Length: 580
Image 1 (cartoon, rainbow, N blue to C red):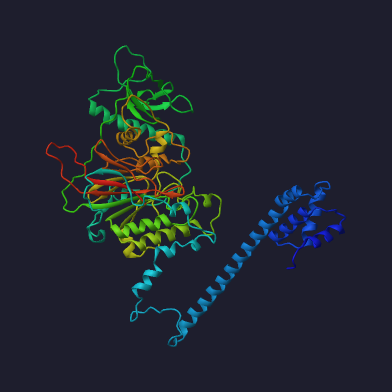
Image 2 (cartoon, one colour; image 1 turned 90 degrees about the horizontal axis):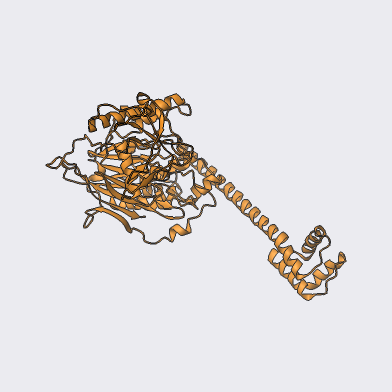
């Protein structure tokens, strides 16, 4: 490339009769030629074209800066993107050639006896098994989740790698002093893990949805009112419920479902009580002005004046066990929002390897539909392939019992509630024995301790709809108590727009058959561990919060016999929420 000087630029400008006697203008053009790797004739041609579109713009330092901003910078960016694309194509071509060469070598190895020292690929036979070091390297989660696996331009998240307070405990429950958070059982072999309802009565596979009639929805809601009303009648010794539409001078008891008088948000002036068909099926306004305290939400089944439902106790028999069970709980997304690198998941796998928990409860999303690169279609392979590699890394990198719960934010899975479990046909027999696939929501038995699991953010949804006055308790505790007393994993009606509810399946698989000992309810809201009317409720937070690291939870549970007075004893000895 020839050196550009002021004299060469002057001669090129004279060809087009462009006068230029200012040395500062020529120096500026020389600088632009060097920065943009242009010759004197090229930049003069660009200037002539630019000045012509601007009605004969005069050549000054100010107009040159404008010219650099509008023309030269854009041309420079287009050259850079072309070079990147060309480099990527060359890399892809060389990778293709390498793959073809490897396939040819594999084919030749199958038909020939390799000479000593010339073999590039280690052969595995019963007489010469693969070394543990080689197997560990091949099955390393870090290799499976490397940047090149997802996108040629994948880069680690800077904010996540620079996060502080790693491993800091941010919430505690129970006797955590001196507790060792290490699994004591041999690879979780003795842990009994099963669905409470049994496989026959649980949601085990996908089903047809996107077709339900309003009549069917109405029937489900009516049966819900009648079922809970029957429990209220027997608990409070009520002879019968009065119709809501009949005027009465005496004190009466009515039963119904809370709803709003319009499509807007519920408030103290818009509360209606909708009765079931047996009580007239009509809607009547409810006056809350005389109440000192109340807590209501759309879809809540209640008696007049807001009498809550009785606490639904567990009928599962508890027996004392010598060894407590260590349970780890984590909820996705497992990647930062600015990168598809699974660094948070790899850090979690390292925690699992270090602490060896007996059971790991992993809730979705695993491939988050709200991720920036997924929303912008910047992924170079299928979502199913990313999910398979993610699960393969978890299964191969750990030895604990695993429970996988889907999420409606999993872009590769069914977008319906209740949500069927994942299907993993490629698991080996040994892997399938320690991996349990469950639906969302579900009730799980871990060594006789009942766990309620849901990955749907009901806390966030109900928190936006609930109204209260003078209750004296925090919002989280109120919402959790509503869930337990309404005996439902999603008592809100109508649901939020992002929840696609199939009410016939919801009636069968979305209810709480009993009050669980532990309720796992992850949310975008702040993490916590609370005891709500005898149930330990845990929001472990999400493993990533935007571009930075999030939190996960761990619990120590032990089966215990009922106390002498018959009161319920919590099997949760201790719990913590820890930063990843």
